[in-house]
Image (tube, rainbow over all chains, first blue to last red; front, side, top):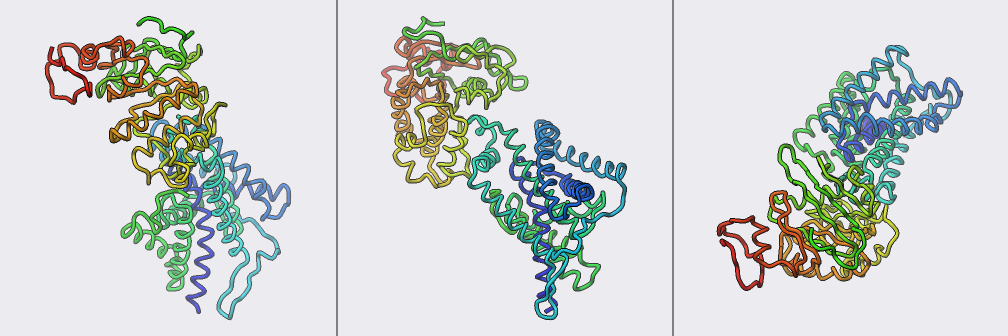
Length: 291
Length: 262
């Protein structure tokens, strides 16, 4: 029963990791940008949520109504300026630029806020509670909610990419941006849209993480980015549902590691990450398409 | 410049003294051309003559170091490729360049997203290529080369171009497939399009062209109507003067004599 509980907890945590990862995967799939500032953006989302909650006193859960649009606009703006400028030099430049962005964000947060950890208090609403199944299994509503959000986000993304006009253009540009230009498509704008979506998902990830745990200026790189990377690589680069699978595998591995010895939690996750890299470097889902 | 072509006012596409560099290499050296409405203008030349570079510069994928591109009187030299496409300069690129993870229909839909108003619709493309509608939900990666080329042409047509640029449509296709594709040309022209095409297959180009220009190492070596030029002139222009009997496929399929080595 202990193991069943571990697996359930791991699967649910995997939803959170999928939220971390899907934006990273989308940006790589569409514009071949490995966004090393991805985790820091989630943290920025968390801080914005914190500010919104402090000022407006709305419940933490509803802060996404403000944070998500703000982050989406930020994503479009950053893509059209900094990241596009880097892309026009080379793909390697985007790695350097996003790394620089990550450093600047962390240093900025330390300088202008502080190094304290924060969490987004959810008060005494139902999502702080949990319910029991049998005697050994306890499921937190919050974790269940985050998992459901992750699934909804992935379903929404899949629907958007496969059925909408912009989704179609995103896929076309990912396939061949020059050919898309020949059809009158401004790929820079399409990249901006894709970045806006990625930043919107990362905003949700930041809020979810803030409610689930605590964040500090360095959480972006030491936790969120690494878990996002692991989930993307385990699941398969550029595959949306792969990020959920990768997140779930990572989550389960961590839970099982923790069950053996609490200090093995993080290590176990990375061991699976390493094993996938060695045995199946293309990831568990071998589909190359991003949809 | 050859004689002004009768019945046409000002040129639709006017390219003047275009110079394009690929790094140190001068790929085009003062190439000019004027395409009048309703023409089928063919650019011929050997591999590396600069034909594709010329087309890619006209649509904006290369930036010229010198020269000017005018379209319908407007200067297009520094305009972005996607803007040129929405203005009516649309190219079927070499190698087809379809969106491989998209279906046939989605490829056409992308082509139609920013289309100008005009006679071409996805439905009409389906009428032009009879097989296409049935297989519209297939990914283009599953199609044969000729089918892919047809989708690429369809994707360009649904944008309702004013001038359609065809870059090596015949490349890598069986002759019978090439003929089938070129057999569509009258129907395409009927809709009022102007065509600028690049071909390595000279006999094919001569069959459809109303005007001809030959490039050699980035220079124009011959220009005129197919009826005005002799096979000897074309061959000399194609290979350069003083070319001496190198082994090569006959340029003039079905031609009577070969004057190579003269």
